Length: 233
Image 1 (tube, rainbow, N blue to C red):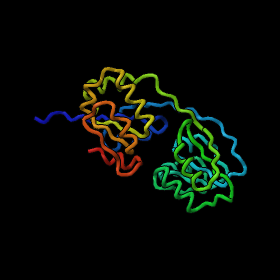
Image 2 (image 1 turned 90 degrees about the vertical axis):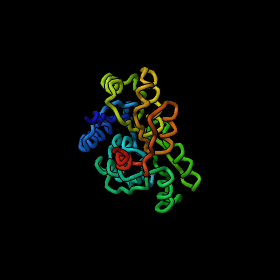
Image 3 (image 1 turned 60 degrees about the horizontal axis):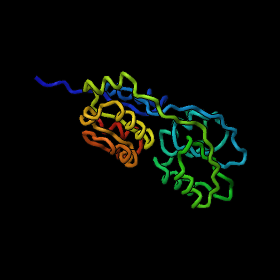
Image 4 (image 1 turned 30 degrees about the horizontal axis):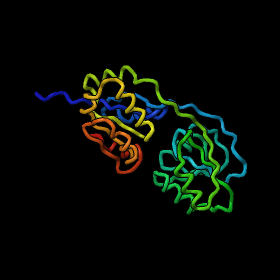
């Protein structure tokens, strides 16, 4: 008789993205186990009239904004899709990371035509700001959402991990990965984590996971959800 193979996948990204990922997992035949590591709160933004373009590095930033007529450069296809869904009309997508977005800005915009408005979460995208300023752009960085750490791991997630029902865990950012590791380490589930495969959206995320012992850590070929889901069996 073949033993039961767990199909639970821990989803650590914050809402509303967690629900989207859960839907994708369910369609693939997996059982999503929601454990958002961060709680997001939008912050109102009064857009500066003189910015030549809006830069978005996350879907959370796109969803936090009320659209207005301005060209949008998004870090990747998923963020661009969220911007269009929010009501922005002129949207272009870069290749998925800060370096690619900086390259897109350099290829399509000119520093002399005005500053770039970078809409971010608190403490995010400092590396992109530096890359753009090095290319001569003036960057107006505005925080449009705050992310605070979840106070605890959801009871349902704790129980599923302890019962051996979780085979994989998905991690979408260095900060949420670090927060998840801290929550998991504080629950006494260290032995159970050794049977879970951690899936990281980028090498930086993988590095944040190395403080606990997993069955193994795998990194997506490209930093987006489609390629992260590709790592599932």
